[in-house]
Length: 244
Image (cartoon, rainbow, N blue to C red):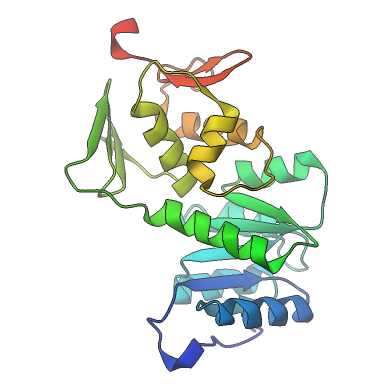
């Protein structure tokens, strides 16, 4: 059973973006729902990953706040299933402090994470930053073509040759940033700033995880990158076509 039915602020389903809150603690779900509703969001909730799959498929949220440690189906298990179906942005809510836990979440497709306890203001800032990445629009004519990759900022699509590639919002913004300046070397800090949009304490090394995920989707051989190169000790760059 789903732990609660959707709550719509003011009775207007179009009033704000829909956030799915997934946490096994009822008080956490209640507090997050109340605060996010005050911020203008529409909120739906689930108490574990199994219920979250049902709610996410039914309500198609714009963003998911996902606890990691839950009974019946953990946040990790949820992501392994759901990210095969949708590229909905996910922010992890984690009480775990180990870097390996955060990295695993990013590898499974999370866009960001926030460690409990956290301030509500920071959480809302993170939500809005991730939603901006997901919605970042541009004129349909703003198309980047480098080598055999075509990235359309307006349509939010990426083609590698004739193959359509589905990227998370963070992966899309990373690729767009790199493709906009082929040959330029970006530090991890610069890439983090480009994709986050807000000043938050997030590991610069999380960029490495997003780059690794991006390579698995666009590179013919991710272990020997053709497009996104590592510049050791500095960061990353998109290889110019003339160097191929």
